[in-house]
Length: 232
Image (cartoon, rainbow, N blue to C red):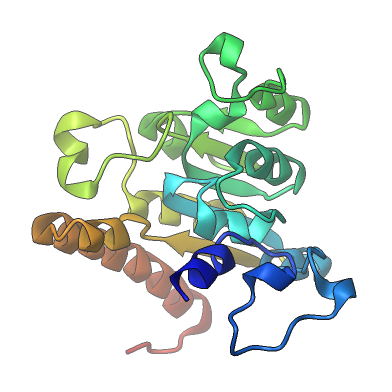
């Protein structure tokens, strides 16, 4: 059973294979196995909406990746990052810049492609610090603020003050995406609450959860202003 669960979790936005299905479930039809499955983000694009992803993990990590990539192994982050770059997501903020850069230039990519250059060629703004992000006013943007995961919230101000908070990334994403008259889809993940719980570290967990709460507040405040609806 543990083996089945482990296999089940590696798939991102593709149909399951025979070997990945729990023994209590039906085997999927052959035409569904490994077939790319549309995501909410892709559906939003089809509706003409702008799209964004925000995380404090590497943006190629499982949760953000599931919205913008289709792979049968969540650990294949070089492929995930490439798919995300070519997915045309309007705003991407988080960590993981090493997965944009070839090994020869100090990164993780073994295909030799420098995806930072690809982003610039595709008319994205690319930033790597809080100040640069805060200065963005319009247009499409990628901001990767760490080579791997971003710093936990409890340590950020002292160890990585150049990194924005989750709430700041959320606010800036909303500012940029809400300029689209057709609306937008934005996924925001407080990535590290889960990791802190796995580590049984209450200070880490509580501070990162409170940081996520501030990001939720940013989204709710925008919704209140936009709709006039009182949220509870």
